[in-house]
Image (cartoon, rainbow, N blue to C red):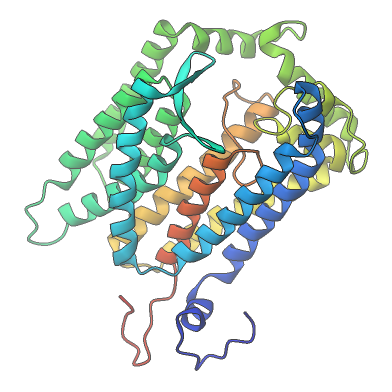
Amino acid sequence: MAAFSRSDDSTLGRWWWTVDRWTLSALMALIAIGYVMMLAASPAVAERIGTSSRHSFFIKQVAYLALAATVMVVVSLLSPKNIRRLALLGFAGALVATAATLVIGVEIKGARRWLPIPFLSLQPSEFLKPCFAVVAAWLIAEGRAPGSKLPGMIITLCLFAIVGLILKQQPDIGMLFVVTVVLFAQIFVAGINLFVVGGAGALAVGLGAVVYLTRQHVRDRVAAFLSPVCNDRENYQICTALEAFGNGGLLGRGPGEGRLKNVLPDAHADFVFAVAGEEFGMVVCLVILGLFLFVVVRGLLKLLSESDLFVVLAAAGLLTQFGLQAFINMASTLHLIPTKGMTLPFVSYGGSSVIAIALGMGMLLALTRRRVTRSSGAEA
């Protein structure tokens, strides 16, 4: 890549000199960490559940992460106009597929979120998140354009209602929460009356109360969080995770020396951060945290000089989604919030998750590229 000269007018040459290479490097570092963590955590999980090969999870994740890196780079080559087109097609397809899970989906732990596809249990709602963020940004921006008669905000809220209804029926309250927060962040960035902000906040609190009162598993998780009992089944994983962090200390026990991953059911997925804490210590955990923080903060700072409302709203939504998902995973692993089954972007095991996150980050890189031409005009 470094061999590209500034005069190189090829597609890759223009991409290399316009893409945010610092953000790209941070994302690639997270993918590399994902490889290391799968090698550390997945063999123990595979052996415990009796799979044919101790490295079956790792081999699959190698393919998933390689595909994710490819998707991220390819999508980052696109122009904002083509990003809008991709998001519209992706949203339509993901919405239909997510609705299909209610009819033909595979039920796991009482939820229908996956479609049975050879070599992959596809969770289409993962792709719904980044695509809806970009579609919502486009609709809001178009609705606020001078002379526009498009009711962008109304259409966005109608689409959100459809998405929310489908996610509630699966049910996937965590995914619905993320989509809701991302949309609210975009509406806030677009500029709304403070009374509307207060009303939306009150509505969110009310909806949270309704979910708490009507969903037994939500009440159980909140109760387990407020009154943790380590010999209780609901708290087994979180207590084991906290013990893993304690065993790791500052520098960790060393690669492959972790012991609690052998008894931690989701060591390769939702609780992979605990494996990192035991084997590599607090220092590496802070590095992982720092990479996520760097991507989010750098992305937001780049938006300060952006004049295109669509780009600002779309990038803000994608960054909110990326940072919020990382925060929920790490905070629940550290028992700072009630546990929620949500992966750590690029680090946890999962095909749908890593590819969908790569799609979102590819869109972010494409939208934040320096759009220049040979004659100082703007690149389409």
